Image (cartoon, rainbow, N blue to C red; front, side):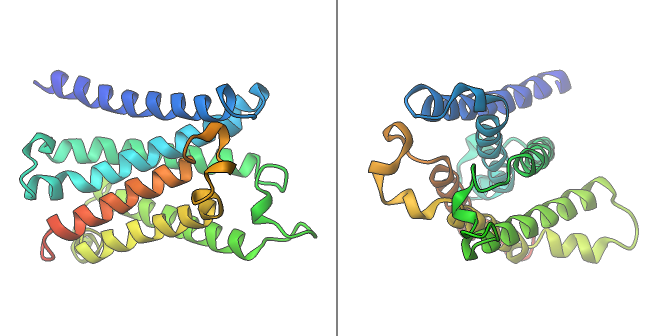
Length: 218
């Protein structure tokens, strides 16, 4: 039974990662204008970021979806842990990859003419950093349950806390790419930006958690 569950989680994780990477390669390299030399870091980073968002939001939304009578998503507590940890690991990988190429050539909207951070760059980085720290705290508490952490665990698993985390993720994604979301003519290969898809996923997760997560329990 345990092995069967593990295989199911692995299939979900690899499917999400494979589809995310496939879309990134299709959008930027196949029908877009990005050179194939940028596949190992720039494109990989796009796919990793999308996969991380999908896994994290799905992890946070399993219980609310079940409460909304969508019983097909009732994968249990273990699934939330596995998918959540996988999403966190991919988030860490995304942060490291982003730092490797964080410059005006790859992210011009984040910089002014004098190479200092723009307003958009400041807000995007700040919201992304806060989200990353909160995610780390969330999973650290679950991996290190001990006496004296009950109050902290109660706070980070509360409805308001999780909604705040999803809101910060949404802010980060909004500043990442809102300038091109309503301009299809600027989309690589005519396909929606990954930041827009990620924002829609987060928005969906936010609504699901508003409607399906009780305020008094996780």
